[in-house]
Amino acid sequence: MKINHQPLPNIVVGMSGGVDSSVAAYVLKQAGYPVRGVFMQNWEDDNDDEYCSIKQDSLDAVAVADLLGMDIDIVNFAAQYKDNVFAYFLQEYQAGRTPNPDVLCNAEIKFKCFLDYAVSGGADNIATGHYARKVVRGDVHYMLKGADTNKDQSYFLYRLKPHQLEKSLFPLGELTKPEVRKLAEKAHLPTAAKKDSTGICFIGERPFRQFLQRYLPTNPGDMITPEGKKMGIHEGLMYYTLGQRKGLGIGGAGDAWFVAGKNLSANELVVVQGHQHPLLQSRSLIMHDLSFTLPEKPKEGIYGVKTRYRMADAAAKLTYLNEDCAKLEFQEAQWAVTPGQSAVLYDGDCCLGGGVITKTDQNSIV
Image 1 (cartoon, rainbow, N blue to C red):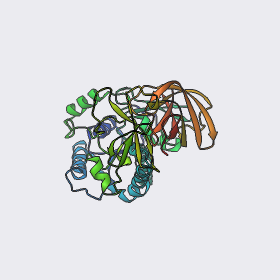
Image 2 (image 1 turned 60 degrees about the horizontal axis):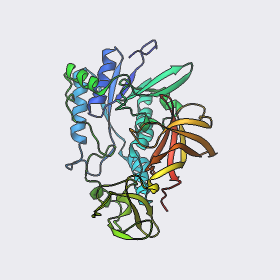
Image 3 (image 1 turned 135 degrees about the horizontal axis):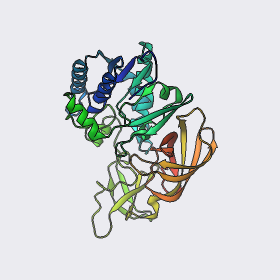
Image 4 (image 1 turned 90 degrees about the horizontal axis):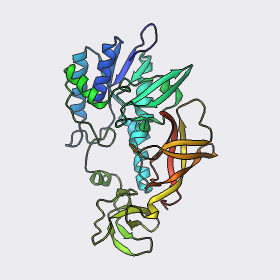
């Protein structure tokens, strides 16, 4: 990785205690840049229980920094996380939608609070272990998909504003996950064999329903077909997402059952039989809270779109409804497009931004 700046910029790496951020720091150190680390502690409610790994993660981050000869700060952003990420997370679940906390966490914590902290301490850039790339053409910074198509995380970074992207570096952008593991082993990093985290951003891996019950009251109700036939009892609308198959408890012969909608006013969960049921197929969606990575928003037209992480780009026509709301019309129907999730636009490999899905032509939260 080369950065064409003289003198070399001071870089602060966000170190989570995982292998990716550890290797990001290693790559920068090997390239000769002045680097220090920051470990962000963003959750305090139960950081000593069996599902929360903050203590171990911080020890791992410090161990890596020590091995690499780096200074590292442990910084607490728990109040900002609770106010700007977790409160929204609960609000969306209570409204029957399925939010993506990783997207908001990146925008509000990693590339806002962390960036502000680093710059105020004299940093020129921050770096993270995300699998994404950045190129600079003229004065414009473009965010591209990571070279590893299986690990590309540009979807989670679509809310970065141009000024945040300008200050951000992604040292793993050209690497694959196996290459990152090999580099970690070569450098004898303590995190080389550490398992990747798959839990809620900064909260950890824990039984999800049990966790939500601490903050939101349960409210069981009927599971019904679109025709009104009762199929069972749901445990609370917030525990289900559109397209969900597991945990419905509907027996009998025939195709599997899926969640296809929620009726908040009646506290009913709408279920349908068969993966290809029409209510699971959407031709269009409305998104709001638009955010773009480039100085000028994309023009109306055809783009590649992801409505969930890891899906292949789907061609869709972008039309603006107002300054903060747009419509996407897909060339082919998309499966289980989910309100609360994000629709992200791409021009080839370039991530342009996107918005939060509010409704589709089929699935709605009412």
